[in-house]
Length: 526
Image 1 (cartoon, one colour):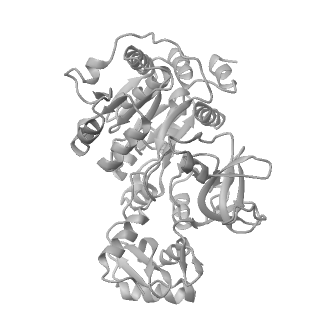
Image 2: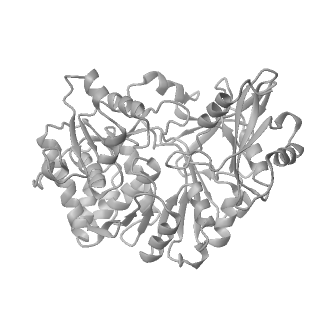
């Protein structure tokens, strides 16, 4: 048994210890590739140690929080691992968030360090924070500057021997803020044991030195971190993109012979729409994953037809507890589902009163596993809201999603509980209406939201993105879809737009659509 295998066999372990072992085994092997630049494992591991030593020099104690808000870079990834090697807790903040929300996240996190770049600084001033907290000892470092006292190159020590920190599985590993698609972001505290379980799962699934992982989502997203962190600990080569571009993605995949990738559904759609997609040799890229947003059955079918290899659609939450996986290449008759519960994950359905439902009944999805967050940072009441306990006291995480098991044990997802429209006392699931709209040959994408109605309380309104060269008018499309829907499901209005608003990991911002519709209407929909 190799040193790496011995480390992985431990019930609880350290990703940075795995990284150090990997760097000794394959010092010249490419660890990270970005914009044509290559960083080998020996040099990457040295960066990680220098970051750890620099933070400890600055007074970091185990459990202290380090915040980062920046674009994708080698320095950012080294900061992530270096913070962990020093015993700290990294919190990656989304540059796309509003300045107000970013300030709120920084306050909530209690971070003592903030690493950022010039692009973020132009959109987010720290003046409101420093004015409200004049005694703050927050230290700021520029990741993309090479001169000045606060520049990365000046801050980074040459010390390669940080003080070792003992592993505590319950210690926070990172603090990740929710996407904020339904409200103010909340800090999700993920323990070290959670990331270790991710790494063991990745090793079991074959990730290692022969893996070439292509990632194109931002570093603040759990979508990125779930494959990237284990990948680097296990010796994979990770190709990063500063920003997703379908044509560039295809060029990188072909050039570097990528073997693994994780994309969000809208990225698959853009790849399928790329005119020269079929001209690229993607034969090496045989393990494809999708997560973070609903993946339509039609799009899954198109990907399977045009892009051979594994296609794994994963349903889960950054909060953990719940994980289902559909191996679409093995179950082409189940593309309308989100698959079956992953190994070690227990899924149940509950009603509005928290009563567990019998198998096959529709209710809110809750899940339990060894991979669960500790809670929302500084928000105990919000933590309690998302927890459900069964009759034995076992803790489950509530998803806010509605679903049911089919007769074969696959989970059929209905909708977000918060997105469900209650019109005239009837429950309407927007996903059902969206699926019907997307049956029209001239419709590329659809989103349905509930808006206030004097007559019905709420009523559904559709937003549609048409395919290129489509000629149908909104009145004709509205009549077409309403003729196919049940009487209580019919859309009150339909709007044609160029693109659906999304966050950086592809989730449709339905709250934004709802607010936009209400604002633009002179009176509530009827």
